[in-house]
Image (cartoon, rainbow, N blue to C red; front, side, top):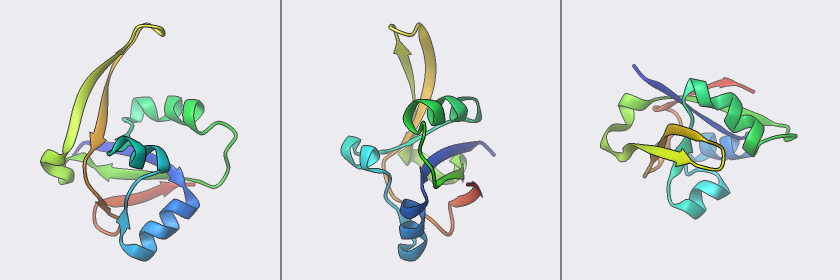
Length: 104
């Protein structure tokens, strides 16, 4: 099993639990897909996109359960001299079946 991670606000996750579906953050909705991090990327993602924010939730997702809608794409950031693979999902996560809340 390959596990990927999503950081979201507690209010976003409460909405997902209430409706049974996680639609993504405002940035995800704008881009048209849900962004994920690998275990190696999660701390960097938190520092870059969520610095200073409170009431965050860390979600663990079984990547294999997402099927063909999960895409892995190489991304190169020439400014930072980084090359990495990013994961994104074009769909809705079923909050009670595909996601485990692992931290706050």
